[in-house]
Length: 194
Figure (tube, rainbow, N blue to C red):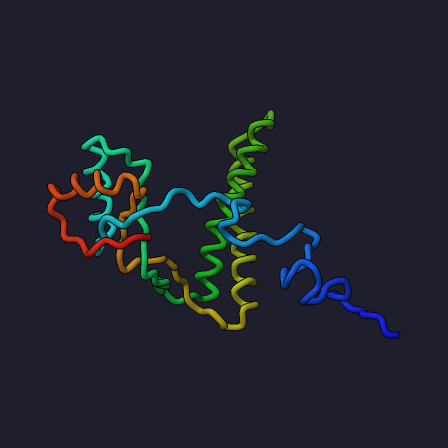
C-alpha cells in the first residue's frame, strides 16, 4: 500500500468539496464578488474622455460650480506611458558635487542640533557640521558613482503620462452630470460603461 506524500497529499481533485482549492494558512481562498473581499464601490460610468488633464479638471470644476456632488467623480488616466527624460551626463565630479550638496544639508541639520546645546560659539559648530557633511557627501557620491562601473552615466527623471483622461461618475448620478455638461461644450469622445 502506498501513501501520498508532498504538499498536496491531503487534497486531490474529485475529493469532497469539488475542484476547489484547499484552505491554506491564510484561510479558504475566495473569488472576487462573493461579498468577502474588499468593497469596490458603486458602478461607475464614463461621462467624457479628454486629451489632456486640464480639460478633465475643467469638467470637474464646472460640475463643482454647479453644486454637483463631485465626491462621486474621478479622473482616470488611460493609455499610460512611462517617460524617462535624460537630464545630463553623470561624471564622477558631478556625482561628488551632488553628494556634497546632499551632505551639506545633512551636516547643516546635525550642526543645528549640536549648536542648540552648545554653550560656546554655536555658529562655529553649525559651520563645521556643514563643511564635514559636504566633504563626506562628496566622498560618498564619488565612490558610489565609481562603483557603478559606467553602467548608468546619466541622470534622468521619470514620469507617467496618460494618453487620455476619462471623467467617471457613479452610475446613479451619470444623467445629472451629462445634463450639466451639455452646457459646457467641451469636445469629448463617446462615453462607455466602466
